[in-house]
Length: 167
Image 1 (tube, rainbow, N blue to C red):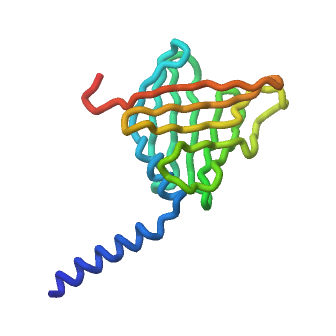
Image 2 (tube, rainbow, N blue to C red):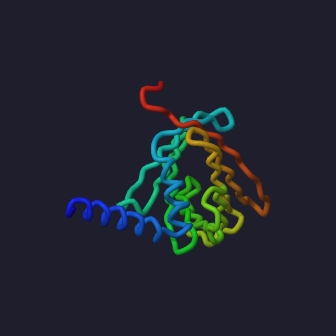
């Protein structure tokens, strides 16, 4: 009887922990499901994304490794009812982007520029937004918006998850 009571208590505690999760926590958990390696091709250049959960599960690090060119890092975190993406760019600036209030954890995550550090001039190249689209467990699309000399643009990158044992 004591063992049964302990088991019931464990289920209740686990359910309470799930009930305490906010929509932004749930959206972050979905984003964290990207952990692992992804391959894609951008304008004819092969690229690898590596997602690693770090800081005791409070941050998701994305390493963007093009076959040619410098590596870049984007860090994703929860901030209240939003998610934050801070991109450490090869352009030597760091745009910090934030979602609107998370209301639907299954929707694409659209991050918009909040502030930027390291920008020497407003005319310098910099990212202004990122949309992360998780089509399914094995397909990911990123839409990056940018500004350069008062002109705006968008780059769309598509990636496929690398499965263990796949070459």
